[in-house]
Length: 175
Image (cartoon, rainbow, N blue to C red):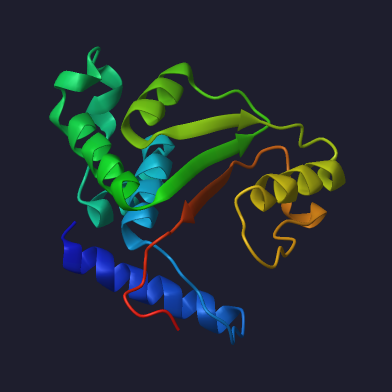
């Protein structure tokens, strides 16, 4: 996908997010980080969802699972370098929270290509799981700390992807 495509997607995503939340405050998002997270999600998809997301990302990850040495595979290298680029400018932490077993190959490939942390959670008690996820987010949030998850969002067959980004830039003119 081109940079223009990433920017257009990010604009559409932000607009829908802003409108759906009746937001009146500020929202910050890194389109490149979101693009990388979508790559990590698509890596594990099969079927029609995979077939729809692959053309959007401009990448088909099917061959990545059949390669022994990821460092010599152009697709894996390209996505790893893209993740490195995001990390140059931001402190980033991407994770998937799950209660099921994760495919071992997916675990290896997603760590190499996307620096995706896999964190196993007990989703059998939705109230406790939601509290644990909110506490996890609080570790990466500066300022107001809203509860993002509630027990209605937690089910045992769900994977929860979290992408946190810390932006620290010196302003030429403080305001």
